[in-house]
Length: 235
Image (cartoon, rainbow, N blue to C red; front, top):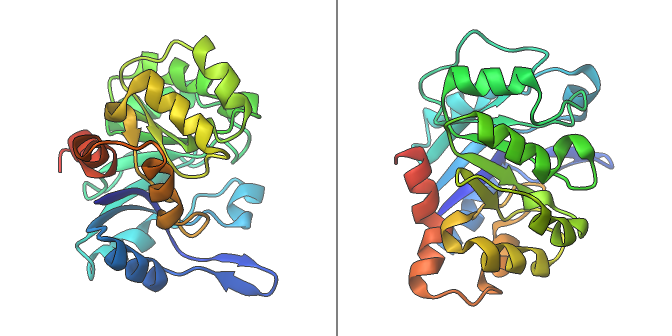
């Protein structure tokens, strides 16, 4: 299996650090997760100062762990001229500056880098809605992965209103209720769903339980937990 969405680092809070990569690797090993797409952790300071998380901490870890598939976190306030060729995908989080997913700067950078893009989504915020994902996907040629698949309850009621291009995929972490993923599965099938945990905010055991709640067959399970992301990233 491949976990398509993991963060490298810990979450500070209440006088302690929550989660660490050593713990993640132990969980992944027990579950049979052989590879993981890793992006740096977004710390509170990154969101308040509109700064970019430490992408190169992931590449440094890659030197000692070839199971990592590096993912570059880009920030419209600090766009690079290019990125290291070791990165296999890019990630955008609209909460840094409350920038819409379909902002022209986002579209232009995705076109320039020409790698699959993961975008944080939350249907309760207009700038990070699945409608904005659709708008982005219609203007780029790469796969667009909706991290959290809209996340909140209203996703269930709104998803039928959107016209999703075929290059949009739905990631499993941070989904509020199983019924949301069940509706996505019923509407788009296993070929459009990507297993991701969002560790340390989420846990791969939770995301896999969500997938199992769909009662998929063996081939469908393999699509969601490995084959879809392998195809997207040309692994």
